[in-house]
Length: 478
Ligand code: N7H
Image 1 (cartoon, helix red, strand yellow):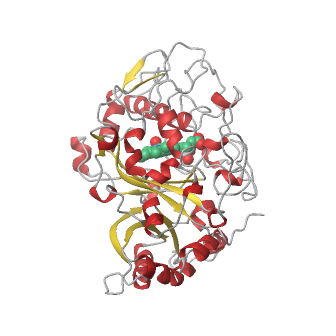
Image 2 (cartoon, helix red, strand yellow):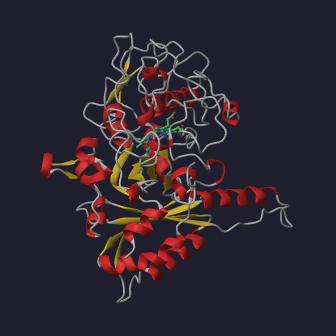
């Protein structure tokens, strides 16, 4: 009974995309903005519309190719919009019933708690971020995704026209645009370290039709406010204002990745196993840090050798629980990125539900491929990384919890019957003296010191509320 015409499209179905621009804006004239928004809302793609787009793309894939063997091109763009707490305040919208301390404070105020680098402490803490993300000046973000730069750019021009950008009748100011692109060729779908991404996302009861073996599907209220499963800490349904229902929180993180440095570390610390070359030992170490091989095959099912066939089987690729040799980390380190961020049986077998901690990840890569010079010099010259985005009905339970209480927490996961301290998530864990145990299957008690300069560097971010279509019409339009 989900109203797919009421929910912004990227939340449940994820925009099909080759490229995506996050257009961050400030609101200068709230009254004018509310009037202009009326003309913008028809541009917002709903879940129902994205599903239609996806069908169009599938039909096109199966259509006869053009002479010369080229597939038909299909031009598609999707637009969504979200507002920061500062943006809602600027519009005079009271948002206390959003009940999310992380959102209400804004991400810059949360940065110290997330472990981001910066100077000062407490109220004087200033994250080492790009200036645009500091000072609560971002009021909203247009998310524009599509098949190509021309389609996305022309959609952005359409939006700018509606809000009169660069004319005297402008209600908003453009602060910053950040664009991401799917990587080229065989790397398509892989993030910049080389690992296939977008494999494991929670399936949503009442939305996803097929439920292959893997983590249990979540109630819609884990993603959507006011729906079944959107509960407080005592299990009682959260009381939401009407305009909040079917909205979701979007976390944006501008995460740079130091790829040559990551590769150098793997090579320098290549694992020695009988029959493995230095390169294979480096690949094995990479797989153990992430919990999946670059192909996407889970280490829990393919511990010592990649098995790319697993990835082509929806019934297998997510069907693991970290239960093999649970009390020993010979198969998969406790701190491996996918184990830290979705611990599966590590908690569930101990009677602890992880449903409220699950997030729907979207996001896209930014920056160029690693150049010859960077490869040679084993250092980053050109900025690249991940425009991390995820949806949840509570940032405190979702993104913030995963980052703070799991990735940065050396003692997580608990309940292990080994004396070893799991350590930091080697990909996103932040804090002093970063290390992890279990990286070496020969001796899982050995610890691996991680470089003081992490491979993933946050350069900014913000928390947004992505309202329903009804919410936009009833609360945001003048
Ligand atoms: Fe992660 N990576 O390439 O190493 N992530 N992640 N992530 N991540 C996942 O299963 C990566 C980040 C989660 O259900 C995969 O779809 C990188 C943040 C969660 O099994 C890979 C960055 C947070 C999952 C990566 C990054 C998370 C997940 C496997 C930053 C939240 C699903 C692909 C640059 C705080 C776990 C897949 C599950 C999977 C990588 C960021 C969370 C390859 C490079 C900030 C919940």
